[in-house]
Length: 247
Image 1: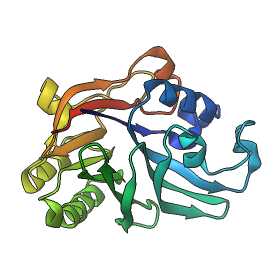
Image 2: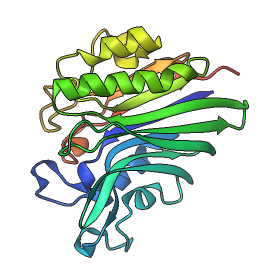
Image 3: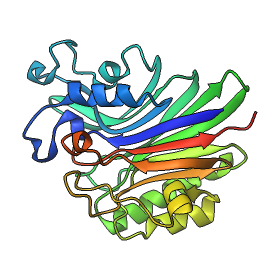
C-alpha cells in the first residue's frame, strides 16, 4: 500500500507578489494530484473580506474549500491572528483523524508560528501515523529555537512512525541536520536524490525552503512539482511524495 502526500505553502491563495487570487486554480491542481494527505501552510481559516472568496464557495475558510468532497478529514492550527481574520497550517486527509493539537512555537511578535500535530488511522492496516506540519521563522535564531521546540515535542513519540513536513525556511540547511540527528528522521528528498529540493520562488526555484522528514517510513518517489501551471500558483512549488506502508 502506498501513501501519497503533498506539501504546499499556498500563500493564502495568492500568486507571488499578491497580484492575483487563485484559490480555485490551486484547488483544481490539488484535486488533479489526488494525494491521500495534504500538508498546507499559510492557509486562511477566516477572513472578513468576502472579495477573497471564490464564486463557488462563499466562505473564507480556505481549508474547507480545498478539502471539498475529496479529503473528508481535516485539522487546522490557527497561528497568525489579525483584525480581518487568521491563518495557519492545515492537514487534509482521506483517512480518519483520531486526534490533533496545535503547539505555539512563535519566537517574536511579527511571526506567529505553530506545529500542527494530527494522528491518522489507516483502516486497511490498523496502523497509526503521526503527521506534523509547521512553518518556521525567517531568522536563524528563531528557527533554531523552533527546531528545539519541535524536537522536544516529537521525541516522546519516537516509537510511532511520523511525517514532519513544512516550510522550514531552511535555505542554509542548518536546521535539517538537527532534526535528522535528534529525531532519527530522514529528509525524503535528500535520501532519494542526495539533495534538498529547490522550492522558492515558484517561477524560478533557487532556494530550498521546504522539507519532508520521515521516521520509520520510507519514500519510493519524491518529486518537486515544477510544471508550468504550478509555477503560476503561490510563491512556493509543492512537494509530492509516495511512501510504502507495511502490510
